[in-house]
Length: 103
Image (cartoon, rainbow, N blue to C red; front, side, top):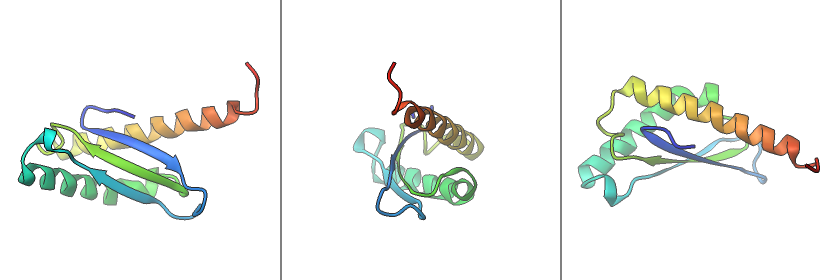
């Protein structure tokens, strides 16, 4: 799921259905080391505040920082992350419900 401040990818973890795993990716495209580090720190802080309420157990998430993640207002980052998680799980639930049906 792509938002204006972060890209969220998720995969169901079949071996561990009780825990939530999170990985962070920042590339050299978004800036020098200090910008990539700030981006990762901000993503970790947003995850600490939001994931217990909005993430689903049994999933592995990868958060990819974008060019403006380090500079955007923190509330916008949290709002985008929450929206992306909601949209992502709405999409994955509808896909799993349609797996057994022939269209």
